[in-house]
Length: 391
Ligand code: DHB
Image (cartoon, rainbow, N blue to C red; front, side):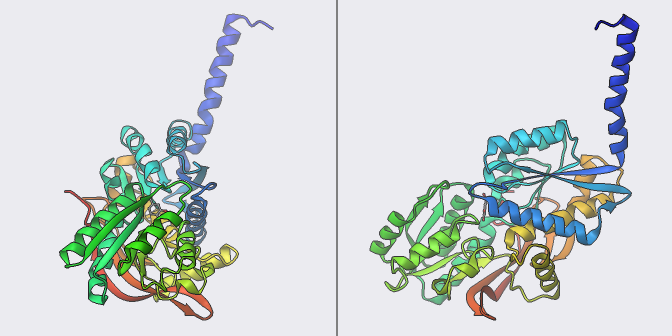
């Protein structure tokens, strides 16, 4: 069918209006684009962060400063090219007010330039390489950094009979941060890293590395692997009889991940780690958080990724309230900076200068409590800023 010109023009005008009307209706919607690995090797991170974000919304309502909060969850399968593509679509098509999530460092790095160009705040809820916050002035972080948690363990180790250490880390941003900051601090404290081993991030096989550690026979093996990979390390460490050979396992809390810890078995007992969150953190707020999270998620125990998602939502909600629902990206960002609040992990602060999180770091030991394995905190270093910041 052919139309006469005026009719076509009228139709075109209608089409424009139709496209415009949802935009009007959406004026009262506040959109959060949550990009996470929901499938693939990092899927537990996505599951934990999404569940925590939904819990926060269920507890605090989905209307804030007169706006209806809408969570749009996208699965990037932990491939940074996917993260970038999805973030681009969320900015351009969905016109999200805030981007959030970011399961691994390469994802956060891939989205950083888009956040800058579009002036969209990006709340990094999981990824933990120190330099992420320096990749865009629009990044705010609610997770942690590897330097932040690694130095505490390098202070603890030499005071507890550990002088020689082999480090074993995943070969990318957070692993390299952990290796560097652990080594520097241990050396400063009079200890020595005798070998630094790196395993690939994708499909790692720990066996040949652990054999090497056995031969080197250090006092301890220090490990960082990302959330989800800890159980495999623990299993192989025990199977190879490393503990019986007198080599202690020490690690960042990513290894004794609460998502997996309870299934790791007795081999995990006594492992000392440093981290910012344990599901066993003995505060009233944390008990309520863990209970509510487990009720809403078939008894799944929240891990440190969940707490990053939960607190990230808090940062977004409070920024929306403070800017009275009126501001764009810059107003939201300004209201995210400097927030101080009690998290299930303890007191936290979003440093206005660095946009990174300042928090307590705990030393913990795996113990059996009420028949379940937990990271039980036995010491705390208060208000730790990321030691990795160059400025
Ligand atoms: C990162 C991912 C993790 O799962 C983790 O535990 C720590 C850091 C990251 O890619 O930044």
